Image (cartoon, rainbow, N blue to C red; front, side, top):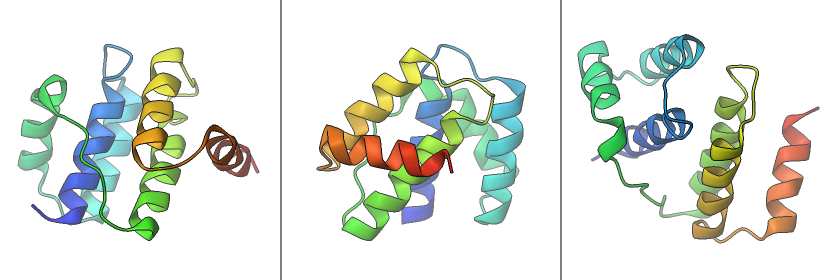
Amino acid sequence: MTTAIEHFRNLVSLSVADGTIEDSERVALSKIAFDRGIPMDRMNVMLSKANEYVYLIPQNMIDREKQLEDMIAFAKVDGKFCDAELSLITSVAERLGFSKKELDQFIQASQS
């Protein structure tokens, strides 16, 4: 599986963290899929299986940082940064090897 697909699957996992995939999240996922060359039919299959996905950890630090930045930005797409999304992002940050302080810095940077 390519890094782009793994990364996208992780965003799909985040989108369903609060129990539902909002329309604004679907639109954002569609744009991300298009930008990354992921066919819409594949995206739709992935969305239909969102609850089944296990988070996949990127293999290098650059991809890990990019993944975390993208997850934080994506969590804010629907205008809300809900507890379930923050919990998932915190868990992901820990798995990626980031401290709470580093995560807070990523979140702060996303607000500028």
